[in-house]
Length: 304
Image (cartoon, rainbow, N blue to C red; front, side, top):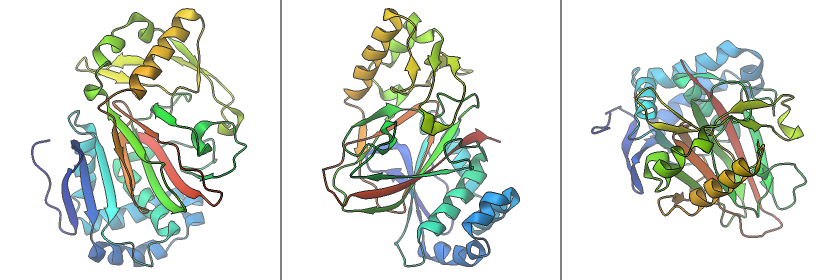
């Protein structure tokens, strides 16, 4: 993407850490104008009445003069970019967790249709990271590195994009966001062409995901232009043999050791949108604190 859109009320620029990431600041003027239409619906209404999700989405699109949705999709589908960071200009008092859920809902419905999230039983999932955790996945493990991965590896729906929002955090040090574009990864050509990475792997999931089936698919495939795409998370593949197990170890090491991984801190209210086929994301461990708390929201879905 050589040029950026000019949308009144939205400050659009290349991110300071990478020109592959587009940064959008939503101005206070737009945020204040969203409060009234967002307040027409509580979060439960969005959950029970799917058409209201499009209503809040239209409120956002109208304020951009019908420019934001097409711009976001253009960025996400562009192999040279594919990632957007959105932040409010200021964290004004009325921008609470419910507002951010509605904003994330509005953005996701400009992109397409969210997938049903079996973990939550809704079109989105909320989860907290705290000092103590007894869950069955890395998602909530504060002091363990969450390795680079893509979403939706263990379900039978396509996951074209993922929206990740930071709703709240307290007493946090560490826990930085990590992301990597597949084309920047120094081992992409070597490992994406390895025949083992093109084999079908079995993918399961822990009980908390509420998915009672397994799927099979390769880690790497190609898009319509022959460029590699990846579908991978370290916790869920079930290797059939030593060959697959050794490949997974090599892949995991090569991703985590990449010198092109982008590590960044994000303020509360930040929303990341990424193309799930060629961007991987993860998280650094937190510094230990008994009062640590972070709450996140995730929506994943397909382009319309």
